[in-house]
Image (cartoon, rainbow, N blue to C red; front, side, top):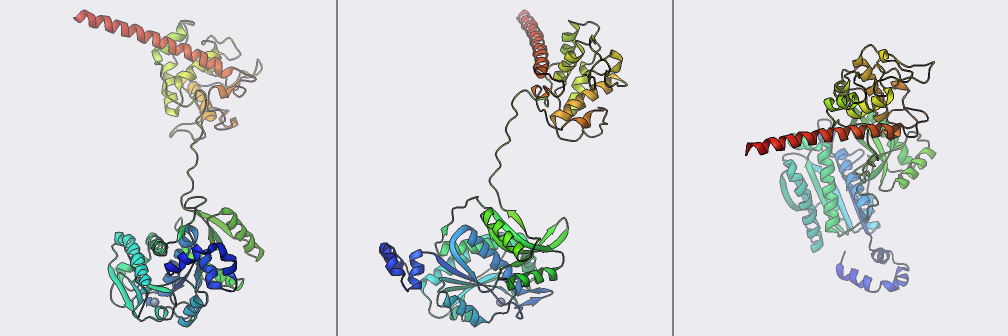
Length: 489
Ligand SMILES: [Zn+2]
């Protein structure tokens, strides 16, 4: 595109309604939308270069479609394809296509063969405007910037009398991506990451060279791909592409391996807006493709961080020592059993605050004086299953099992995870709990104890007094240490 002309049009754009009349070229320039033709070399009955089971035409198409997708998603430009399926197309048809549409840029994509390796780019070796050379230079460098990281050899910016370069009226470039018959190159050609990376590089190069305006991405980098069927047999995928072509829907096949199984996905559109993808799926269903679906690719907006749980959590570490937990209880009930260290030990295994659980046991058993329906020999320290005089609740063989059941019951409320490795389920009511429904002690209100409008608060009140005792005893100890130290002077 000639820049002076462009400025001229901008200057008189106030009159564009007049300019639009009967002049398609002018219309296009006024709109300032670049029209780009991507031309995947060969196709249909013309496979291009062949090596082993590989055909150049397929590689050309794959890169071309990726280039198209990248351009369409990221830039304001009109992207046209000479072919978007495995279709036979004469060279003249290709140049006629671009010329008839007054494209601004023509990019033919090929792979090389017969002696050599690496990348080269071509422009026409006759008279070309300076802009053609500039475009070649920018796209070539952009490609190599990415490809070099993969060890691709730069064969240089070349010129040749190729038909599509000679017979296109606009700036035209032909790329020879790599050599299909070179083992080192072939490894890269079959590497999906490489193909995606260089396709993106080509698209970026074209965008830079043509000064395309970047689209404001509604969701950065996200692409909603519409898959019009996914097949284990490539033949079935090809049939689907042909069916879509008959229904005037552009599509192409790309292979993908999921859990070790290779699928041939038929992609019929890629959109940066989910709505548009949904619309395409609906349209596909209308023509009888019931198995169309959408895959989301790229980085989505990071999910907002999960809301921190408000309140004192059940999950966590103990801070009060076993000795002081025990001392706290024995101030009220000197005959209380020594369970504190079991609470700390088992609580730690489950990631539960064993000291706070112990406070719960203190509350449930009234300092292990068992003034309720549960009897000491049940080893049921948290009233599991105890609802009244007729139902005194579960019994456990040993104190260890009783404490484990208590911790497991808390774990059921506080977490959705499975039991820690090697742990056996002993809580008979574990599966009756809606997992993760009470992450905090206060959230146990109305769940562990009914109605229990302040059940959690009562536990935390005991727990706070335990902490107070711990602090008090630590202060006494600090004091003793300090005084001892002073005696040393
Ligand atoms: Zn070729």
